[in-house]
Structures are given as structure tokens and as C-alpha cells.
Length: 178
Image 1 (cartoon, rainbow, N blue to C red):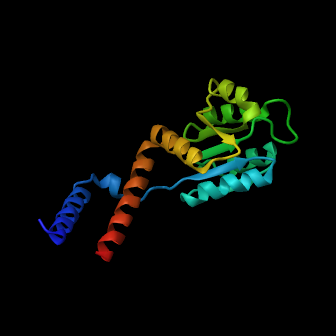
Image 2 (cartoon, rainbow, N blue to C red):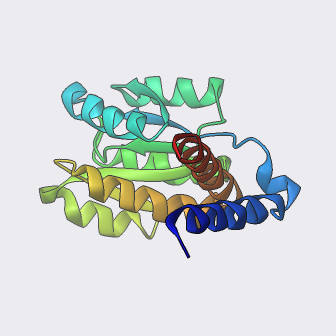
């Protein structure tokens, strides 16, 4: 089979696959948004850049009070990412905030962000409704890998719709070029 026929066969296969998808998976994904609570603004911006590169809209706050206000005003966050000891708070108020948040807003995925020296906080946090953690300094591939796992587990349908949309967009771009 020559190259042109192989490409046409592949295109036909993908178009047939897309046509057979259930209608609710062809809809718009709601996307995802994150609230990042970190008193270190450089670290917060670094995480924001990683998440923005994969289409996440981010709000940054530096204090626990700001985080609570933001969530009260917008409970539609997909992710809330917080350090264990935000500036101006006591011992591990960040962990308590995330734990309580998951109980009050079950659709939010709470994630703890820790440095290597705070890794014991991360282990304890997993027992308190916190679903995952990112380790500072951030490695983009690790953040994305962990985030993909969390989204596929806790926001499965939206995640699948988002992946399918990216696939279809990439396929259509490729098809136009060939």
C-alpha cells in the first residue's frame, strides 16, 4: 500500500472513531482552574507557568485569608494547591484548610505543595482528604504526570473530554497539513 493510501486509511479510521464517540464526550470540557496558595511568589509563579502551559487558569494568593476569600467567591476551582504553613498562619493550617475544603467542596481536588524537607507533611496530609502533592522545586514533567493522574481519577469525564478535544484538534491540524 502506498503512502497516500496509508494516510487516507488512517484518516478514515480516526474520523470513524470520532463519529462513534458518545455525544457527551464530544461536548465542551469545562477546562480546569487552580487556586495556588504560596507565600513564595516566585514558586507560585513557577507553578502557574507549568499549569498555564497545559491550559489551566490560575489565581495566586499569598495568605490563607486570601485563599479562603477566593474559594468563597469561586467554588468552581478544579484544584486548590497550598503549602502546609502559609505565611501568617500557625503550624499546619494549610493542611487543615485543604482537608476542610475537600469536605465542603467535594468537586475540588486539594493538592499540597511541599519542599523536600516538608515531605513528612505530605505523607500525613494524604490521610486528611488531600489527594496529592507537588514537590518543590518543581519539575514540570512530575507536576504534569501527577496532575494527569489526579484528574483522571477525580475529574474523569472532564479530563477525558479535554484529552479528546486536544486529540481532535491535533488530528485536524495534521490532516490540513497532509
